[in-house]
Length: 398
Image (cartoon, rainbow, N blue to C red; front, side):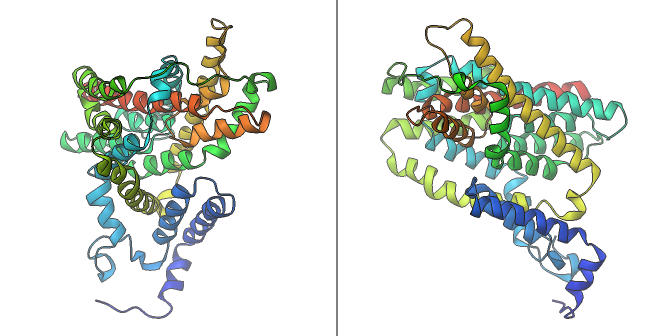
């Protein structure tokens, strides 16, 4: 092990002042997570990971042998837990165990609102291809498909498809950029910043009268039998129609099955509490560690972030407008169009934003469970679209 001089840290900062810029970004995320209490479970670990990745010598994020030191702990997790999809699948397992599917099952029309988020996926995909066509960036179809999923604000699915597309390119000798880190950080950034991004869009596209629409709940009771059968049948149907989506859909449905079965409470509690908390800590730190200044502060990465932001805005707007359109055919039982914004896959952040805005307009208006329906449908929809892309895109590039 080599020992470094007292001034080496200052020397590295002088050689790469982008570190200081990333400190400011980490500080901004710390501020929003701690002072503003905006999604602290995600923002605080991600901000810490960014800070660790931008310290001299990168002791926590360096590869084995780099700088004469041992492999950094966070680099170990990048390779052995993020790149092989372990963390994304465990997140889906915990999400399924922690989520009640009853709002979606009680109101099937929420499935349609969840489809609104998929507009954002295809906007980002087409935008990436357009930038490549104009020569601005060197994005191929493999990279465009990975960038597209950012539009659904689904972090685990983004990691999953980005890894698969990159590995397919490497296995088949196809030139493919390593944008796993950029797409992952972009997706999780927009998930965490939902309370900042969505409210202005919702206010712009809805009237005060629409935001005050009350929706009775429950729409209809859902039996325990239906709750148990749903995850099993969904896994089989998706497994037959979209086999590539089975890892994601299978894990979230298994998590929900152990929740609804009622016979394995220890497994359900572990999946949604202890396991989920551990994975969130490690995932947040690892995702943040993918953002050293030399990688993040470059045109291609910033382009991915801008595409992701635009796609996320489109997905939010599409869900709202779809709800407003459905109201034209459902005047007796109108939908509060704000719940359409929850069709993005950021669970439960988007649903909480809808509830907060509803409470400000009318303290007695409770929309959380209604918003959870599109929120859950958005997760399932984005994972299914990812499976479709994994099936189609490789065939198109070979």
